[in-house]
Image (cartoon, rainbow, N blue to C red; front, top):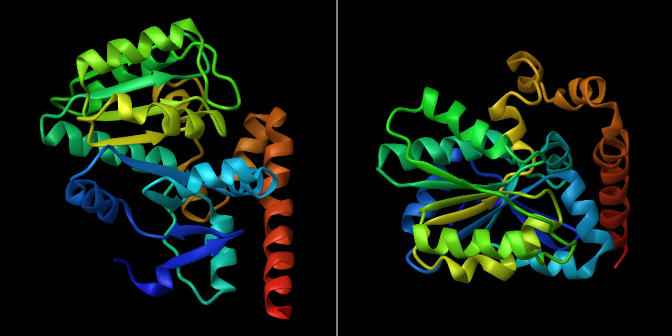
Length: 254
């Protein structure tokens, strides 16, 4: 479906390095159950390398985009030219597509109880015609199982029948939740894990200036604004490239 030099593999997981417009084309071309998108970044792939069951979950998604400059850089070592699309940018692109086509959007989860609602209000302020709804995520276990609050949210979402469902539980919870729950929403066009996107849209967290994002150094900005993330940034910036190099070396020796 895509150019071969924009398809890459890390730890046995296929990554499609396509742009946001091509992702929307995939959604529009899909005629089966909700099109499931994973925004694959180095942290997610390292987690999948360590947890085979999570790797299996990721492989069940319809599309895994390259969210992270580390993927594009390591892809070049394989002779690939992946296009990087951050999860928050892709999610907003899909929301704009939904608004343009009169399709309702649902936001579920987020780190704070009201962050999804604030994110939706902010999106509606800048995207004309956007129709949306929000649901609390409740407590989600690492295997994707939710508590009673989450069960109630699923029931309400199923009745409201949104076309786009954006899930903000963080990895690996959100991907495992989608794997468990997407069949509850047979009429949805797309379902996607969005990590901390609600935090940025709502203004809870500042996003790096555009010029920093453009050169792939957003992780430095996040280290200064969210120092508690240092372990996650270490995995993304140091552990992931080393693990990829070791994996490629082993494959070359076979």
